[in-house]
Amino acid sequence: MNRLENQVAFVTGVARGQGRRIAVRLAEEGADIIGVDLGSGGGFDIDTPHYALSTDADLARTAELIEETGRKAVLRHADVRDFDSLASAVQEGVETFGRLDVVVANAGILSVSPVLDLEERAWQQNLDVNLTGAWHTVKAAVPHLRAGGRGGSIVFITSAAAMLSVPGIGHYATAKAGVNALAKSLAAELGPEWIRVNAVSPGNVDTPMIDNEFTRRLFLSHLEHPGKSDAQEPDSPYVRLHALPVPWVEAKDISNAVVFLASDDARFVTGTVLPVDAGYLVKK
Ligand SMILES: NC(=O)c1ccc[n+]([C@@H]2O[C@H](COP(=O)([O-])OP(=O)(O)OC[C@H]3O[C@@H](n4cnc5c(N)ncnc54)[C@H](O)[C@@H]3O)[C@@H](O)[C@H]2O)c1
Image 1 (cartoon, rainbow, N blue to C red):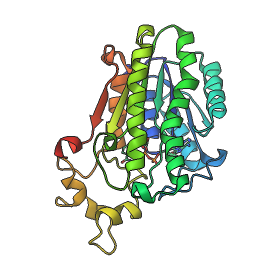
Image 2 (cartoon, rainbow, N blue to C red; image 1 turned 180 degrees about the vertical axis):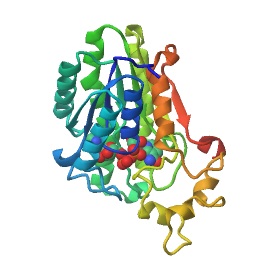
Image 3 (cartoon, rainbow, N blue to C red; image 1 turned 90 degrees about the horizontal axis):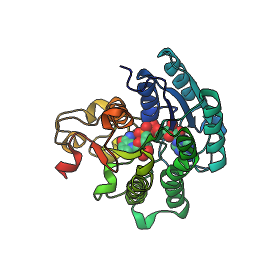
């Protein structure tokens, strides 16, 4: 498929998980990729998630996978909390490829705590990465969309948590609700320039953010050593979350929704929050 032939996409949090899959799917559709992630570039103070963030090897693997599609990649270390590092990564990518068409604000972190028990730094890291980082991403990228004069498409990766109450991640839900509001506000502001702005809202996705021992112990607290196969049992609490009988969606499902929103197939779609959650929201 060539729905994005010779276009250029910028993706944050590109080293692994959904960001990697989104970048590779956009490349399969014909786009060259500008991407950023932390790696040895910083982010060592982000210490409140219950899982490790990505490595340099992850970022290098994403570059290989993009290049295997026949498209090119400019992947750099940058922290979405740091506007200047993001802006210079996008600038370098646009100088290399000559244009920018698609922006995917995907980088994010998750930590778990009742809201009133949160330490100040957990609250702040969550807001800085998940909400301010999303704002920095569009602030760095939109001038390049505008300069092209061809319009463009912006997609935020938000969360079903923004739309309902999920005990233990209220701070994350608050940040993602902010992302939804940001997407809708930008859709109104940028529509006259044919820049469309939407969000994809996953439920649980099988990435390192939830595929870890800590999360399994939360969901499967009745088991001493819960494993991934326990989560996939038909009556597991993971499966019971959803209308469809699955424990989670996969990164490829999110990437397919991003390709749709990025492409002309969605040419009149703007200001939407699209759930890709196996019926998580309708089940609640
Ligand atoms: N996995 C899920 O169940 C789930 C559900 C709903 C929404 N989401 C959202 O999906 C997005 C992608 O998450 P994922 O599931 O792929 O998790 P992940 O942890 O596998 O990937 C997130 C990526 O973002 C990067 N990142 C984190 N902080 C960064 C920063 N400050 N600057 C640059 N990069 C940074 C990480 O290094 C990592 O490579 C996130 O916004 C997340 O909140 C995930």
